[in-house]
View 1 (cartoon, one colour):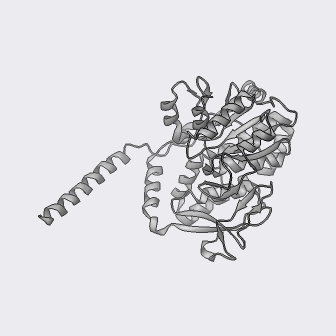
View 2 (view 1 turned 90 degrees about the vertical axis):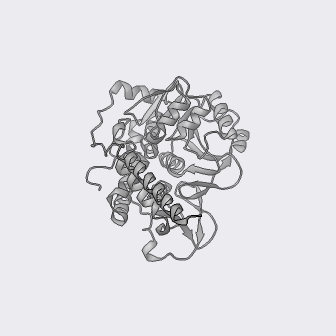
View 3 (view 1 turned 135 degrees about the vertical axis):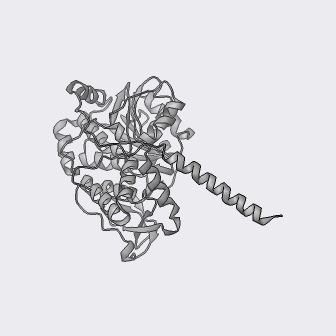
Length: 383
């Protein structure tokens, strides 16, 4: 065999692939300019609140469902933590199977119950079912349970790519909806009867609500609080979270697959040998909203992953009473790879701080990459 020919043929193939790749990259659009989304009309806002009013109980029962393998971290924990802060509903976290849940991209939790145990205790069903993004949108147990809850009168809320799960359950056919920008094309291809609504973080139609990307679970939760307990209560919780205001407005054009996004993701992914495990010490009473946002953000850099540690393997209860299982048992973590303790600062401000810290450690494009994945419009002066 002529190894020189083989070698040069291989180099030629690599060069051709690189040329094609470079050509594809430059077909992608540059980062779009930021634009202020127009305010939501009063009539539309009132209609959204009316559509989310509790369908059954004066004090509603809210169930958050996930599968045990790779349910999205913030989608699952943020609605739980915010709704528990409000104390205007009974909120439970569920899994399709017994045992702990490994969330994606970070954290492991012990849900309150399985869907079977929930059904045994609440045969009349929940008032609201919150459906996060999941690694599978075709899990038979999850789909059947979501359908059964809708049939019992529950309002179903698909957070982020949870819209794909809700659609797979047959609950979005012919309805208006939204989802995470990255999965929009797939959702439309699989379910062409869905009517996509741009420039809205939250869309409600016929007893089913959907949201845009991961960070939308914060305004969604506040909107739900307003529907249940009124504007004053929602504003009080919003202040506690660090949000002076919120509504469904959204600049959809700001979130798309761009050249900077692709280049940064690929550059960081290629540095796989330098991926850092960054330690977060678990302590009792940690705020689950802040923990979810910090761990989620640091695990989306393609340069790092958040790892929780504690001096025991025992699960620790958060502020809202959900139990987090440490990833590792350790009494300490190397200083240069240890993240600051989760502070008592409002979670919205902590997310901005985390994105700034990511930019300082890995450069600004990586912070932008994470914000794009979270579908989060960074606030003025927060960079």
